[in-house]
Image 1 (cartoon, protein in one colour):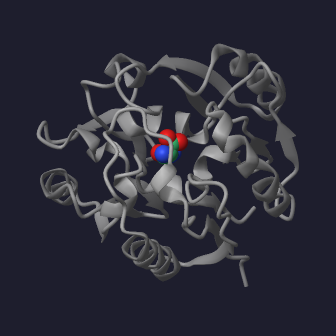
Image 2 (image 1 turned 120 degrees about the vertical axis):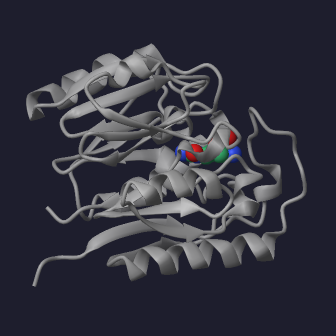
Length: 258
Ligand code: CIR
C-alpha cells in the first residue's frame, strides 16, 4: 500500500482574535465557528485521501492555525521558514519537529524572512513573493539549498496583498489561478492563467490536492470559472478564518508520499 498523503494542521488558537492583520480591518472572530469550519476543512482534506496530523492548540500564538507560513514542504526536503511577523516565530519549532518525521529539514536564518504563503511551486520552480513578510535575503539561501536538488528560485514583487499565494496559486501542472491586479502575469508567461472574477479579489487562493481544488464558498463566480474549465472543486466555508486574513492553502502543510 502507498503511504498516505499527510495534511499537517493545527487547532485554531483561542487567541486568534489578536491575529496579525495587514490588509483587513479587525472584526470579531467567532472562535467556536472558526473551529467548526476548520474541522470541516480537515474533513474535506481527509475525504480527498489525506491523513490529518493535527498539532495541539497553541493558546499563546494567535496565528498558529496558519501552518503553511512556517515551512515549505518539497519532495526532498522541508524548508523551515523564518516568518516575517515576529509574533509568529514561536510557531516554528513545533512544526519543524513534526516535519522532521518525514523530511530532512533546511532552516532559514536571520536576516532572511520568509512566510510559506509567499512560496508558489510549479514543478521545479519556486516563485517567492517579496512582500511585507518575505525578503530578498531569503532568496540566496533558498537557491543554495535547493539548486543542487534541481530547483530554481525567482523573486516576485508582492505589494497589494499579504502573500504571493493571496494573488496566485497553482491549480494544475502549468495552470495558475490569479488576481491580475495583485501580481504581474508576465511572471507566469509560460502558464495558462485563469483570472479570478473581478468582484472577488481574494479568490486566487485554491488548494490543489491531487486533481481536486479545495476552494472557499465565498467566491461563487470564480468557482464557476473553474467549474466551466472542468476543475473538480470542493467548497469549504472558512469565513471566520478569512477575517484573520487566512485562506485555504494556509491552514495545512501537505506532505506528499515520497
Ligand atoms: C498573518 O497575518 O500572518 C495571519 N493573520 C494570516 C496568515 C495567512 N497565511 C497565508 O495565507 N499563508
